[in-house]
Each structure stands twice: as structure tokens, then as C-alpha cells.
Image (cartoon, rainbow, N blue to C red; front, side, top):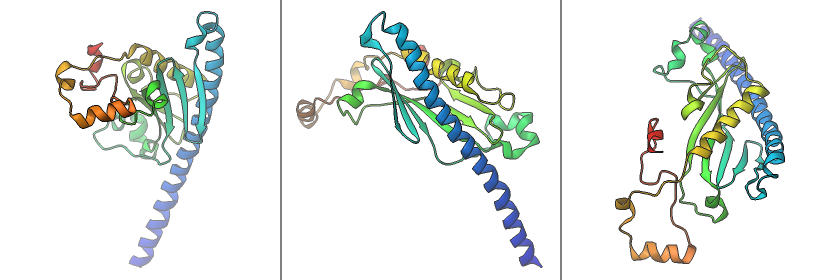
Length: 230
């Protein structure tokens, strides 16, 4: 009897969770595909205006692979990456305080789309040691509800989890917020003390490859309150 109960418990738990996670994955993938389409549309829309001002600074969108795409914004590169796994949140996360999740624990399972900010020259010159920054991550659940964790407006404009389903309008707003943050997230000269000493080997390496590690906050700590450095 005990063995049968265990078997039933395994099957019921597997069926319930696996179904939810599959729904989450499909919703996240559909959202990511929508994001690619919006990125393409946004690039065309903005370039119509930008081309009248300065063609050197036009946006460039690339659909690189199924789970990744890129948007070049002048000297910056935004990388959009969908993780293929489904995540649960630790019990200290604020998501558990929402009535939406408290009424349905399965609503807490989410897929995630990450938005990273790199310097475009890091890819152009193969500077593999350069730093990139996670500026936002978008969470989508089984009901297509979403919330965003991120820097500045990305962290507080899109956090009503359980209130709205993600759609093209919301995706465009998130993307435009990411672009605005990136444009205002300037490359800072690293503190003198972090670069004042180097080795002969490092100098030879730099001479041979023209590769000096660069990052927008190289030598600074990049925390939630780091915006004060601007």
C-alpha cells in the first residue's frame, strides 16, 4: 500500500509540475520570439528618424540564434538571452508576499529572459576579458504574467506580478527602458589605483593583441545603488 501511495505521489507531482513548467517554457519562448520581432520593428522605426540626423549612429539588430539576439546602440551592445530552464524563487524573495502567488504556488515558476549591456568594441576587437552587466531580467510564468528585476526604471515600472499579461506593448516599453538606461550608463575612467601597476607580460600581451580589459564600471562596484556614480 505504501509503495502504491509513493508511486501515485510521484506521478501526480511529476504530472503537475512538468505540465506547469512546460507551459512556462512555451510562454517564455513565445515572449522571446515576440521580443525579437519588436526589436526588429523598433530598429526600423527609430532608424527612419536617426538616418535624417546622423547615419553613423543607426541601430543594428541581429537575430543571432534561437535563444539569443543583439541590438547595437552606437558604442553599446545589448544582448538578449533566454534561459532554457524554468526557475523557482527562494523563500526570501518578495514574490512570495504577493497574494497572487500565495493563492497559487505554481504561479511562482518562471522562465527568464536576461538583458546584458556590453561595449560593442568588446566584440569587434575580440576583447574577451571585457566586462558586461546584467541590467534587467524578465520573468514570465504559466499565466503569461510577468515582472522585471533591473536597474532604475526597469526595476520598478514592471513589478506588478499577477496584474497584467505580457504583450507587444509591454515588451516595447521594456526594450525602450533598457535602451534609455544603456545610453545613460556611461563608460567611466577606472580609478587610478586600480590601473597604476602592470606587469611586463601584461604589457606585451596588450601590445600584441591591443586588448586592454574594459568595462563601464571597471574598478567600481556595480550594485543596486551604483547609479550614484554617474
